Image (tube, rainbow, N blue to C red; front, side, top):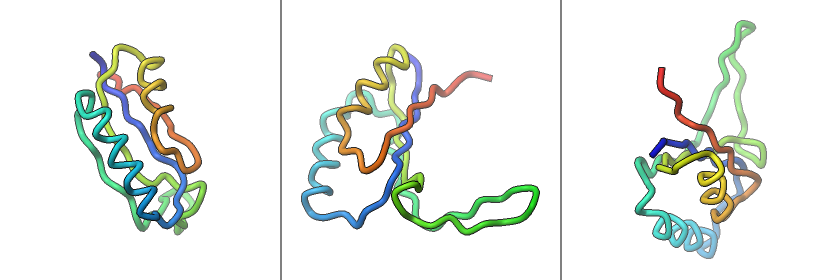
Length: 96
């Protein structure tokens, strides 16, 4: 098995229904979860030109989950079952 990072994109104030949907989704993939991750709040971007505030909105990266899957296509199928706000980005955690 390989590890994949699912990055949640998009923020809306969660309703009880949205919170319940996420809870059900996590329960449905619990056998794949390596790290259930965290939700992100305040963010800043550091560049060569300085530091920028990053707002929480529909374009914000808002959290992550690490799962096991055979390949990226299988990880994408798992991501497609999530209660997506804007998008779910899937990255393979490559060995160095």
